[in-house]
Length: 211
Image 1 (tube, rainbow, N blue to C red):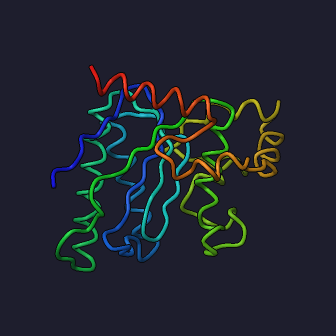
Image 2: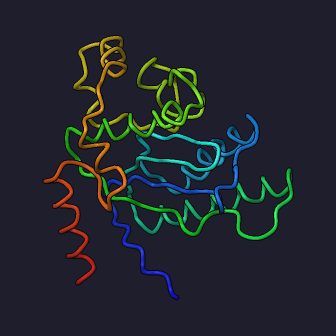
Image 3: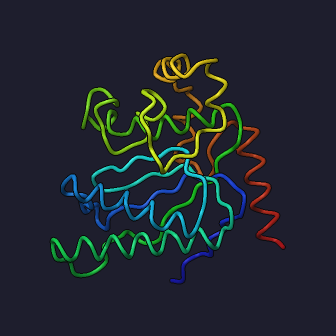
């Protein structure tokens, strides 16, 4: 059965996720996570986009992004996934499909819930029981917002400045920020955000599909 066409728009916001095939563990050690991050940095310079939040879990990855050119971002993802596959195959050996199909791209509304979406992504390791405190997980963007740690992958979240007047105030407020129930309820829907923003995103998708 042929795959349905992907609708990925330029200058739009997405939650992007990739999974290892059959829940395969895609990161086995620190060097794997570091290699993946290195590849993102390398290809992001050639195929630019805004990366606001990310989390690398043992068998899948999350990005919260804004595309610049949609086709260029797709090229970035192809290069990233293929290059990391070669790294993995070289070190561990692998036959068959490494990634579970294409990457998934879920439209995200640009509203006050946006930054909560980012934090929700970063809390995945704590929800999964890998760590108790998200500060202790090295492979996500949480420490950039909560502790002021430098991260050359990150474009600062568009709502982060509203959390306080000083860096320390913003960091403390980010740590204390409560994830609204609406985020948890819409996390797995086709579009993500408030009811109004989800409606707007769905309407935009329908418009472009009918063009």
